[in-house]
Image (tube, rainbow, N blue to C red; front, side, top):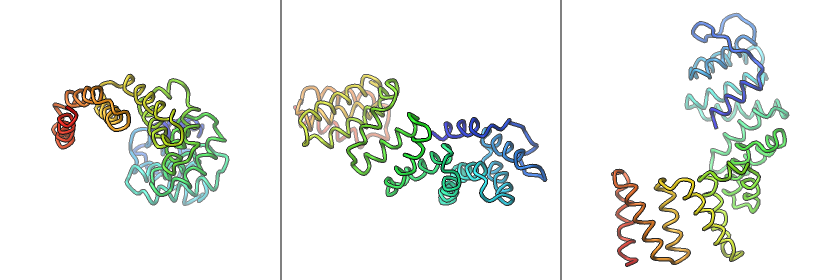
Length: 257
C-alpha cells in the first residue's frame, strides 16, 4: 500500500519528475522542491524527500503536498509520531484531497487502538474515491477490529478479482466465524471462504493450518483435519523456525487417531 500511495501522489500532484543533484533543497521554487521530493521518494531517498518537504514547509506551513510527502518520508525513516501528526495536518488542511485523507487513515489504521478514528478518516477518503480497493480493505480491517457488523460490506464491495485473494477470503472467514452463533449458515460461509483461500494459495502453510484447525475444532471432521495437518507438516518441513508449531500439530494428529 505504501508503494501505491507514492504512485497515487505522483498522479495527484501533477508534477513532472526532475532530478536535482543530491535531491537537496536550494533557493528554488516550491514546485521544484516538491518535484525533487517526489523523485527522492521514487528512488527511496527518504531523508532527501523529507528535507525538501521541510524546506517547502518553512515557507508554506500548510502546503498539502509538502505535508503529505513529509509524512510518508517520516514513516519510512521510523519517525511514526511525526508521520501521523503531519498526516493529520494534511488531512485537516485538505478535506477534499484523497491522498491526504487516505494517508492519514492508513496510518491511524496501523494503530490497534485507533480503529474508530481511522474509520472516520477512511470513509472521507472513500467518498472522494468510491470503490478504491485499498481504502475498502482498510475499512474492512478496522471494522472487523471493533467487531462491526458492516465489515463484510467493505470486503463484498471489492472487485471480484480482489475478493478472491486468499487474505481477503481469510478475513471473510474470520468475520463469519465470529458470528457463527447468530446464524447457523455463518459456519458454512466461513468454511467456504477458507476453502476459497486454500484453492487460491494451496502452498501457503498458514492457510493450510487455518483450514485444518477449522475442520478440527468447528466442524469435527477428524479425517479431513488430519489430512490438512499432515499437509502443513509437509509444507513446513524445511522451516525450522516453525518447529514449535509443528510439534503441536504432530501432537494433535496423534490425539485425533
